[in-house]
Length: 447
Image (cartoon, rainbow, N blue to C red):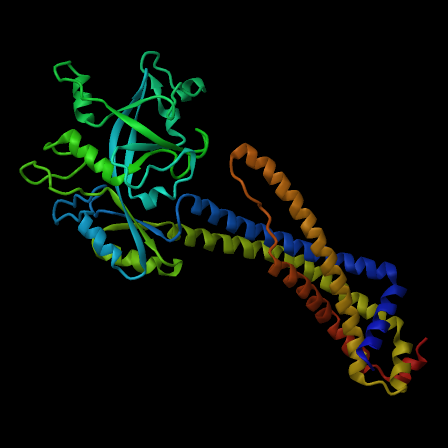
């Protein structure tokens, strides 16, 4: 018997029992939708975590610091490991390292009118600055020698009025500070600044007028990876610090036993960029072996992925229970169909129909139930997913986190329908064997 004939007989049998078929298909619909929605929530949670981690920095970037803390002063018993230009060159030659960005950080005071704040000024290579999303202005020219600054979007909220003693966190109103339109003064010698505020015997440090290149994208409350620092090109910052402190030790830079400054800069940290995520752990281990402290977002990512996989497995298991119940319903429907069609089966056998064709007829029938339920369940899943994401979008406006909580990739859609068909055929397998084993004479005599 041809496949087309078997398919026609199976569909006719399902049409003759519309209510029973509809109820059985409904069970598959609920089971399929449960699995897809539960899995989509697990996938959405995993991808949201990944996007959150990536927002704080590249997964292939490793942050390197000295073994003794911020600048690598050591533990007092061993020679400290400094991040110098020579060390940066060594890192650039390591296998799987695509680039290294040395970062020089210094604490300064910004003043504009009656407003002022302390902040971290970060000097970085231009390649690092090109990663910063700007909301206003543009990067300084590559050959720019003057110090021009890029302000983090949340820095403005730190400025306070020295006369009124008020700040953004007290009043809820942003201070009257304009990075792009008004001059900004910077005090680099913070030690002298604090001493001058004591008994008044120490002269106040010199203020330096600096230009503004741009402001990081985002509002004052959004923060982000670049929101809380001020950035500048590395070489102009070095030149500025040499100009300000001349032969005096630069605050934060290590000195020799005589208290004199080294003839080179020691960087606060370095960002080591790896060519592939698979090589991050290897490079990180090599950097640690060199005596430095190395951190990467991939460590956090690995932990969150393991947690997400566990949650996804639990959610998928909950959905699978519904489909198991649906499989029992299919088996029950097929058994009832065999009892009702016993005489028909007997006639088919007497006419010489192959036993395999009888089995296939019932397998196709149960597979059709799985297919119809799987497709309808998938459509229902898309509707539920859309509704949950719309609800999540409303919540995102309140909590500031964007992204779909339910995500149904194409592979999940195809797998869900295929799994529903497979469950249907497995559920119909044992009833089909019973149909094959029926005695033709006993089946014909059946009333």
